[in-house]
Image 1 (cartoon, one colour):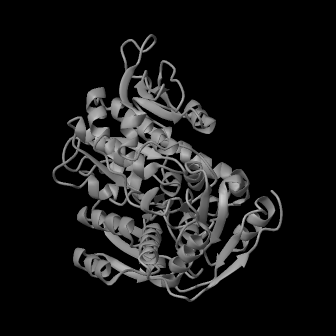
Image 2: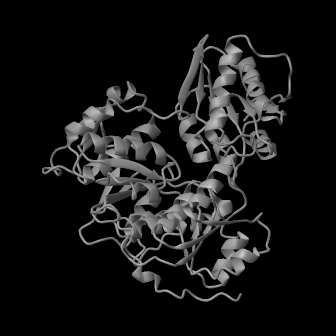
Image 3: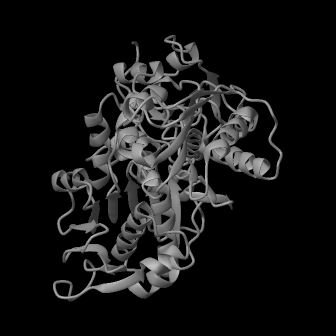
Length: 515
């Protein structure tokens, strides 16, 4: 390989004030995370070479301005000469780089230490003074909503808090913000968690942590369910105040039981049932806290009610779970029950999360484009009794059969989108043979949703919900889940206003038998 093991003791680099000058760092990727890493390291005086398949012109220009080098790598097995001759002492990997990516494999085989952006940010968290507390959030679904809810509750409690991580604002930008924060609520993907050490100077030690739930996802990236679950479990290691877990998902409880935490750290459960003395839960439609209460063995503190949450769109079961988890995290940071109650009444859900687009002639049109895996789609489907389901996209190695079987009885019809529709159509034929299926054959991005909406409108009747919950990633036909959701909403509104054309690019599969 011709590459040395790190020539500098990286264990000494534990602060913004450590000597990072001249450290030779290769950054893989120039997306939001990659640029933040490169920009941070260049500010510290490191020598930075960014290697990426592509980069927008603006980011390339910005990298030039701050003094970074760039080399393009198309994903082939060949290592760029510029990288091979750089003699990197450290590699920072962006979350999207798979474990089998040639550059990752090259760095690993060459003995070059590999960090994620989270480890780098943790080591540098003292840039603007006393470091902010970190609250770590992961799970297969609900991460972004829970992070936003927790941040909203923390701010209501008088704390300077910011959402960061996988949610869109890199943690490296948050820790460099000159105003500083009391708390950073960090959304962590399984990719980021994979690269996080569980011990040593780069291991984060959050105030509180949660894994909201676990279901099969990103198995193609991790290689197995066990590896995926193991990555998620890292969120609990070294937690100081409370590990928050889902009582309805025993896997999250086992993660807490097996994690090495700081002495005094508690386990706090949440669920939609009656809570125990160290839990948050529901009693007769009232959301209550028995974990952070002086008399928790005999009574509970009321936080809000199911009716009050319904008024702000937080009453579905999966949203209630998010509310409970976020409330537990906020209580860990000392936010009062009164502040939580008032803040929940003013929370606004993000777009594309079970968002109502329109209701016409008794048919509701719901955009849940954020349902990018089976677990999220399952939660969405459970909220409605009679559904015309728009499904499909990049399945990420996950078999959709169990999801179809679980909800066959509530399906009025199914509209299948995506470039690889065959696995979905086959699952429907096996597990929901009584359900009419329509395949959208259109391949042009601008045609997919108009055709899907037209097909759905043709079968939906009064009382139905047309639910776009694809159970799949979007990048086969769309930029991202937000683009997919926007195009769905636009197509719905266009159709309802009479703007649909007569072109038909669907293939109908009539029912073949009883379930």
